[in-house]
Length: 257
Image 1 (cartoon, rainbow, N blue to C red):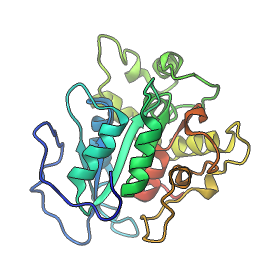
Image 2 (image 1 turned 135 degrees about the horizontal axis):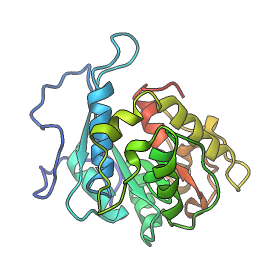
Image 3 (image 1 turned 90 degrees about the vertical axis):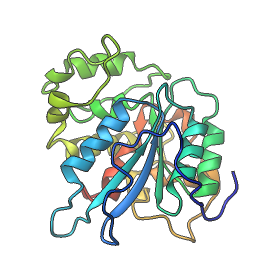
Image 4 (image 1 turned 30 degrees about the vertical axis):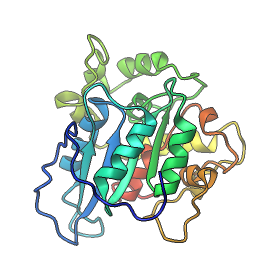
């Protein structure tokens, strides 16, 4: 994937946007294309952000429109980056993917750096971000989401998630969506604490980059991954547990960083 400005090549046949591409847009609306590895949990959550916060607050918070990009059966991290680069054109682009057992994550980060695509990487999975709405969490999981999901099902206030990931249901709709409301600041605080407590020792959430990508921002993969607040020499695959989703909420001014 080459660097420089991205050009829109048209919509993809398997793209499933939750927000119509023909929706009214203006210069006052911040448009972000966000490609997801998963086909259910992440797109549902992004739609929740649109519905709950997308109109802005009438004061300092700018209205925004997230355009989720995903497909049935999901994508690998490299495919996530390539897809959002193609779909976003010159709009702001984010790539969401998990640790899982993917082998192409280092290459995906290189591709994202070259195309200046923001990263929201979760280790071990996006489910950790949901859990952090209800409680703190720590301890390396080595790519397994089993304990994270168990904690989510049992968390105080998360009763709606009691059957999460049972019978394949990982949706974030209805009562599950309602359970998240008003907990955004708590989730961000817990996620920032994970950066601060990273085993590397030099990672600090205050180092994270929150604003839009600038032309002078460094493009090396290590520096690009460090936009999360982790140190440039902190190996991405060893940021366990962690989630960069808090940066997306800070970028949208849903919470103050």
